[in-house]
Length: 298
Image 1 (cartoon, rainbow, N blue to C red):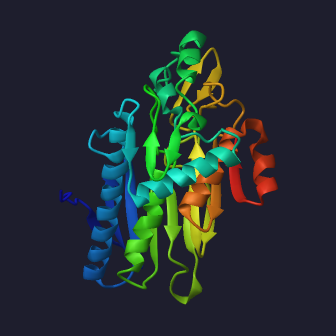
Image 2: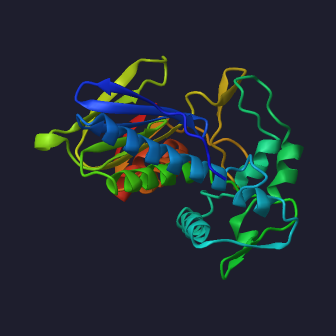
């Protein structure tokens, strides 16, 4: 099925800026060029790749591979090589994090609604859902996945960052011009600008919309941010982050408001940022121990 494209293209200083909406987030691609047709081709390819990944891995679509896996009712589901690659990576993240990074934790959304209200679920409801959480309960071998009935997976913690990396790959297949791909603040660059200049990237404030917390210069690699600035609950003065500890079913306490990490790829940066948030008050110590280039806002 061909997915219609809807990107706009505009001149922005030294770049052409292509913009569109995908994966519930604003997406953009900057191409340093004077060639509008080249910029249009790159933007179209980036948007097409973003929409392909969204259609394939969205948990909201019945016809996606994730939708089919979650609807299998305990039956085995065979997956293709690309999906297997992401599931292997998710399994590695689960092992490396001691079970804190868990793509089966989406079942907890049945109790938690992070809409800015003060509705906190009961401990009994959360305990019941805990039986449906745990990558260690999943059978994953020979490119076939079997979930116990009632369990589900969600690649939301990986898919957007993967889409950013893939989008840059398709852009680089078209042009050697400097390119920046940014999907909702998770971004990657093809290298420095012409003449070795760096890209300037803003870190958004967690307090005010359209305000900046800082400015970074990026010559290569990727940045990814994890945080709770817009998804939380607030009750009796206590803030409940949308970042849940899959081992307890409750929000992580005392985590930074946001963590931004620089790495070679957006997938790597996103993984480290998420793992740092899951450490709560120990986030900074975790990042230092891992030798990560990171910026925390509390």
